[in-house]
Amino acid sequence: MSSPESDPSAGPPEAGPLVAPRLRALRRRAGLTLEAAARAAALSPAHLSRLETGQRQPSLPMLLALARTYGTTVSELLGERAADREAVVRAADMEPTAAGGWTYWQAGAPGRGMQALRVSVPYGAQGDIVRVHPGEEWLHVLKGRLRLRLGETLHRLDPGDSAHFDSLTPHRIAADGPDGVELLFVHTLLQSPTAALCLGPITGGSS
Image (cartoon, rainbow, N blue to C red; front, side, top):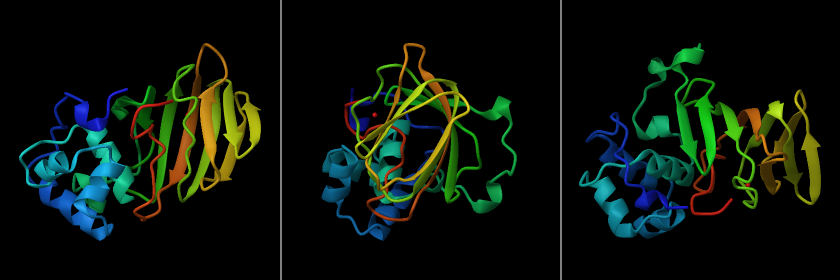
C-alpha cells in the first residue's frame, strides 16, 4: 500500500490556502517538531514543510494521516466551524471515503468529540494491524461476521452483536468471511499528540 505522500490524487476542494497555516498551528499545538510530525504521518519533512507553506495541496489520505497525528479531525484541519455542523446526516449526503482497504461513510456530524461512521471491511483487508490509541470505541455489526481481537482474546461477532471497549486495549478488526462485514462504528478522539483515528493504517499493512 502506498503512503499518504505517494498518493497522486489532488486534495479536497476545501483544502485551500488557509489549510497551510492551520496545519502548522495544529502541529505546534500538538507539541511536535516538523520531523516528528512527518515521521508519524508517513511523510517526508520536506513534503510536510511544503504543505505548511501552501506549496502543495494535501490529498485526503494525507489529511487523514495528519488528523490522526495531531489528535484532531479532518474537519478541524479544513477549518470547519462548530456552527457549520448539522444535527442530522442524510443517507444521500453520506459520501464514501476509502482508506486502507476499508470504505467509510460519515454517520454523524464531523468535528465533534465522538465520531460516528458506517464502515465496510472487505475480507482480508488490514487483518494484521494492531491498533492502540486513547479513547473508547463502540461498534455494532450490521452485516457479515466480524473477527475482533481485544488483547489476547478473540471474539467473533454476528449481525446484531456489539462491542464497547477502551481503545488503549490492543485491538484488531477484520472480516471473518469472504463476504466482508459492515459496521456502525463510534469512537472518541482525545486531543492528544498520540491519539489515532481508527481509519486504517498510516503506512502499509493490514487490522
